[in-house]
Image 1 (cartoon, helix red, strand yellow):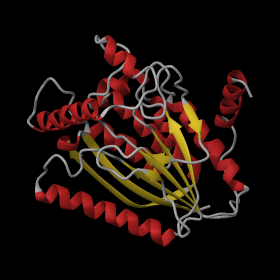
Image 2 (cartoon, helix red, strand yellow):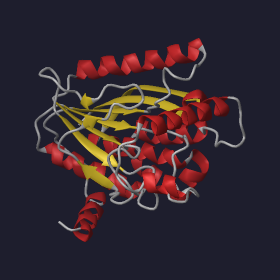
Image 3 (cartoon, one colour):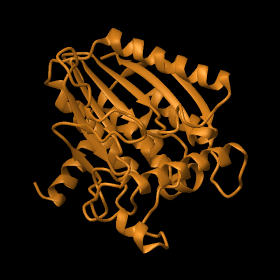
Length: 294
């Protein structure tokens, strides 16, 4: 299938009816992420509330007991670079690179964990960031595929909400930076260490109210979460793509991973929703869990 045929398939999916008579239940988990958790200090009550929300979501996932996991997320210039940057890439397996003090290796690996299907979404490299309508259509298409698959499926959207960490683009004035995000390479420890310190400093400056950094936007985040909780996903089509960057930050496009996963879930009831604006983590941090009702 060439790119034109793929676009036609996605376009057709956007106008097709939603799923019906699903053979197995589905669940949706939307979860923000931040590499700064555990690195930048936050008030004890802030950290406690966030960890409690994550623990609640973890318990709900375990109770759902998925037989298959589909996770949509960005990779922040670790797997894809501007020399080859597709809007989406559906993988056959996922491997953690082990950055930011996290373990490297296969994700959810083991005999007691379900198989995982990784879906990469370009969320940081314009102009190839996919539009809201295309993300909605892709999620609906995944949902129709799952209609014929008799497995309890957990669909995860990882990323968002409002935030703009110092992730470079091709507009960066330094040729070396543009080269780093264009050509595939493994970062050396010294350069990664410098980036790590830069992101940590960004978070603390944001928490201190530094006007040079784009603030979080809880109102924008609430609008996004409201649409996903209610299931009125087409409400998001009214959002202007440029306004996402302008109002919520360049990396707020990661929120579209939630949209893909939520659209694939179909009709669902939200069981849990949590939100905190945490500037130290450069994150409008959201957690949402919903179960299918059809």
